[in-house]
Structures are given as structure tokens and as C-alpha cells.
Image 1 (cartoon, helix red, strand yellow):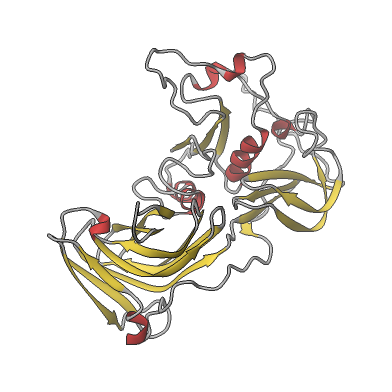
Image 2 (cartoon, rainbow, N blue to C red; image 1 turned 135 degrees about the horizontal axis):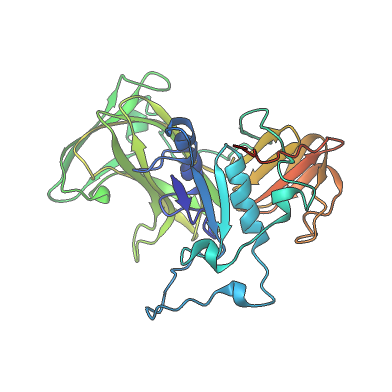
Length: 369
């Protein structure tokens, strides 16, 4: 599978946000980690990041203004690092290209991160552990009252919105992922539009540009999608948080995703969209919290890969001394210094070398007849 155009300038993919695209649940196509775990061998799963997110032929005249034709062209090193280090959280391939129009034929790009600024390919060696979250990052207070669905008072904090031509019921249920109860929504009649049956609560306070993490446990009577968002309650009905679609299964699963707010409203309303399909959906321990825990690390024999998928700069303690690549392309980042902590910009990544590690150069296999 090819995750083309990921990450976009806003860190999302064509099908979901960064966390969904990396770890799931990404509707219909599956996440990067799912493909790495389940694809047939040889597994050629790839993250393909584009310099230019735009359509290849926006004017319709067949032309494309290739930025690489400019002799002063400088690639977006931050975006490249973000895509590369995201790929390094698992074992897939990576490519950085100009645009979907022409792919690598538009410009062949090479980066200091590919060969440790000329020291040799394969310098990171093999991975020594799975990727894991780093830092003591605790999201803020849960803004959704009654989201644990333990009592009738909890359930009363929510309401079921039903449009004409749709029907559904709402009740507490003894099947639970957390505690003793959950909420069960039985959708009896639908015409296929998610928001026309919605489970709503509020008010929710949203601050523009701030990351919010939505987490919940859920299952359904069969595989199906649900959507989640927070929006204005009148006027233009602007959507401030768009968490996209999540694919549920017939067993309890934990879901977590984070997105930045694109507007401010102290009286927004949070909703799950359930009107796509008939059937039953269970939800439990639903939380909407300010903050984002998507800072990740993976250790290799020769260094580490770090990813900051949040919308704010984060300081990451390294639990040891590491060395930055001594590069020429982006010396403000790759300056060769020894570090015990680093500041990661929003939607950025970084490769660090183990101080004193011997670089391992893996040469291509040459077959002789």
C-alpha cells in the first residue's frame, strides 16, 4: 500500500488525521501499522510525502509549474523529516517527491538524513524496539460530562438527535469496556447520512489552534463507521474539530485521535455521527481533552527517530547523550551537536545518532552467475 501525499501540510492524510493514518482506525484502507503487520510478503508498504500538496493540473491546461525548476529551490526539510521519521516508526519504505504529477521524474531529491550527510547509507542499523510514546504528556480535563455512562445521570448529559426519516433509541447497557455500564444506540431506520442520527453533548469550549484529543471505547454489532466532530450550535454551523470517520468492529476497541481546532467557541457542541448504517453501537469512557500525546520515538542500533505530530513545539528528554547529524542542508537543525534533550517543532521529526556508535553501512547484495 502507498500512503500517497502523507503527511499533508496540515499533518493529515487524504483519508484521516495523522494518528488514524499511522495507527488506525483508518476507514476502508487500513493504517500504516496495520499494513505493516498484515500485508503479504514482500511487504512494500510506503509513505510517499509530497513537497506540493496541490493538484497536479489545477488550471486544466496540462501544465505544471515545477518548483524544482527554480535554481534557488529549497525543499521543505521539516515536511520531509516529518514523513521520513513517521515511516521509521515502523519498517516501511519512504519517498519524498515534488507532486503526484510526474512523481520522481520532476526532481530527484537527496537528503542528509538518507546517508548521515555523506557518511554512508544504513547508518541507523536495525531497529532494536517498537515505537513508543515519549514524555509525560497528560491531556487536560475531560470536557464531556457523563462520558463514562455509568448512571442515568451520566446518560442525561447526552441527547440523541434524530432527523425525519431516521429512527434510533438510546439506553444504558451492561456490556462495558470500563466500569459497569456503557451506552447503546440502536439505529433502526437510516437513509445513509451520518449526522442525521447524532449523539450530542455540550457545551464544549474550543480554542483556535489548540490540539484536542478524543478517546473512547467502542464496538458495534458488525463492522461499521462512525464520525465525530465539535461544531457551532447556530449561525453557520462551523465545524471546529473534525475527527473524521472511525471503523468499529464487533469487539471492544480503544480509539484515540488528536486534531487542532480551526476556530474558537466557548459553547460548541460535540457529536458522534451514527446515521450511516442501521444496527447497534456501544460507546464507553468517552473523553475530549485539550492536548496531544502524539510524540513518538523508535530506537535503532545507531540512533533514534523522533516524531512530533502535535501542533506545538515540544521538549523531549532523551535519557542519554545523542548526536545530531552534521549536515549542510538544514544546519539550524542538523548541526552536529551533542544533546540530552531536543526541541521538536510542530509536525516535525528528527534523527539522532548514538554518541560514539560505529556506523554500519549495509552494502547491496551482488549476485554473480
